[in-house]
Length: 303
Image (cartoon, rainbow, N blue to C red; front, side):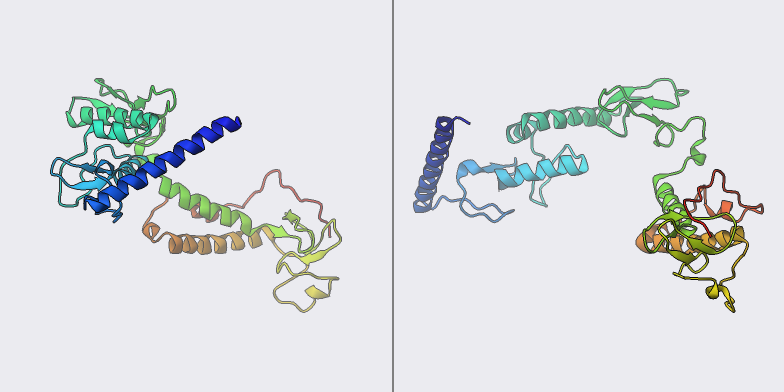
């Protein structure tokens, strides 16, 4: 970077601070310093303050943060005075003065669309994911297609979900259902996976002896998953036999994992306690037919 350019910037900032300090000193002597009722900063000048139409005054920084956070976090585009009892709105021109040009351009687009919506124009609809809006006169059009090149999402006009044709609205899985189902399915899938205690290789089996020997040389019991050396572990052991119906074992493990996963999810998300899943994994677990695992990978384990 050009050092002379850096010098000029440094000098500019220094003089700006000196000028500010002098203005504060004069205002202090004249008892004209201002205080913001929002941030409680009491070292403010008249030029640092903005008043609404009801003369409630707050500093530029607080009003700018209020507008930026409201727009970026909540999608708001109309902002009433920071005084809770005041209903006056800050003007669009004021927001243009406070905000960066790119941010103000986005907010202005949202303001225009919101004003169209408030005008109750017949058949006016807005994209669920961005600020694009249009008029759709044909009631038979089922899908809203956004023409914003940065969005281009398609949504169902009836339920507001992403385009789900050919499914009916009542057949579509909502986000909260999807989150709960995938959480349970992941736990259920993991229930039948064994992990070598030595090298962490993951595996499962379809048949054969329950003494599993990994490629790394470690041996473990397939049932209780504990390290073993020989076959003595299976002698006089009511729980762990040398052979068993592995399909039934996996079924029992996955059923138990289902119940535990469902309970764990509800504990994390109490609002899901009464949620009914359209595609409940339990329907597959309890199907009255043998479980089949296609293209199974046995890993590099032997017995």
